[in-house]
Image 1 (cartoon, one colour):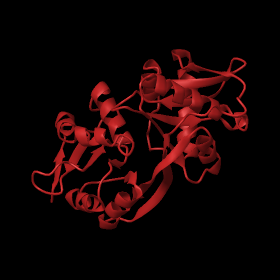
Image 2 (cartoon, one colour):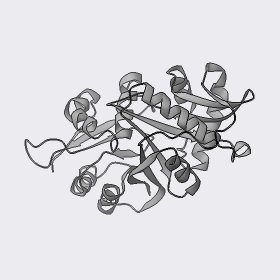
Image 3 (cartoon, rainbow, N blue to C red):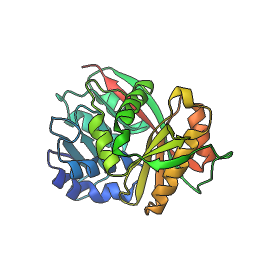
Length: 279
């Protein structure tokens, strides 16, 4: 096997950092995880220690696959060959895993080699912004950065978003994430007549990449174009901040969001899947 496993973020960055940065779109989630762990410490996601790994197809070969595991969240795969994913399942044998996410082919290759039944919990498509197109028609209202006064509302909206998307993690507390992202200026609110009606996250620029998400509009405010407005504004913010690539994920089961983002200039990169394992 050619996987190296490590509990050290510094070692992971030294060994896999160049590979992750060379493919910022396909590795967007891992790049963001590494950024958050670097900024917030090893327990920013929970009390358990993270685990990392990187894969070379042979001795002395460059790294072409990586993963990070930040309990209680599922393991996340980088861009990688199916062979690497299969070997990773063997390397992690005996580890308790709740699930994983990544590109369709490597995720299913891992699942096929994993000694537990898997269930698909999400099918997503990764999009990359081409030329940003303003929403048409423009929705009523304006965008503004979230402030400390918005934290309670956004904690509730985060909870509603993950519940609706069926992404909830047992015991997950959204407040630290909301407070951290609000303080960093990474949450944007669309407001109409003084009332918040939609929001979008905009990640910091990492390896030339920024990712939009989550995006959420409460049901009572839908159908008015607010999500298009806040995503377009967030995309413009990312570009102004120096992003060479602006990315976002959509639920393949939601034709409305896929259509909205394509109209704004987003183009498909790859399909991804989330799997849960019986434990």
